[in-house]
Image 1 (tube, rainbow, N blue to C red):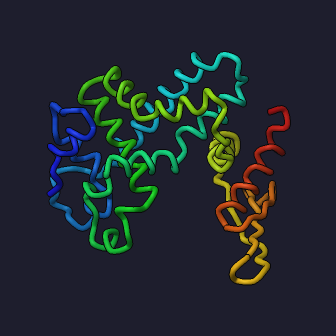
Image 2 (cartoon, rainbow, N blue to C red):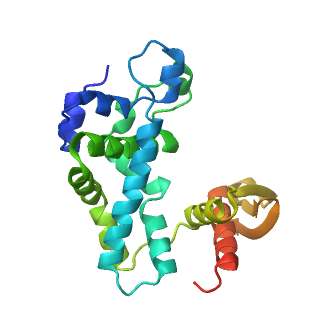
Length: 231
């Protein structure tokens, strides 16, 4: 079983109810394979932590960047709490080594998957809130994100258009953007990918790049700017 004492020392948080921390590390695959386990998966805690993260970051950006418009604040928030950032933070805390995973998830590299790491970090935020209250959860979030907040204040963060587009699509259309690879050109050592993004079957953006990820981001940027011409 994971050494939760070591994890608490890394987090700088010592839990009153250690079950909350343990639950934050439980992937649903583990519960599915161990139906007698005494805790549920971390999904509910992740839901709570995600809401807290959005609130704390939104409040901080609102107060520290009074010159930014609503759209610019939205872009900054999306860049700050995107999955890539949360995964990096979770990796620095070595959360992957503490996860409770089912055998299949373990064998498929579940300890390094972005979604698992980001979700676990959000679940830990939710657990801290339930165990020690909003002030402790807020302090923990801001301590983790302070370097990124500083970069945003200095104008050094590129908007994460995939996150922006996903949030917009879910809020406005209750849909999730779908990315389609429509063309690959060039030799193996210098391929170029072209990706199209749709929402509810409607084509909204297209982008190209030297990797699928870059092409998807460019397609998302094209769609975001089309949907938000005023920003």
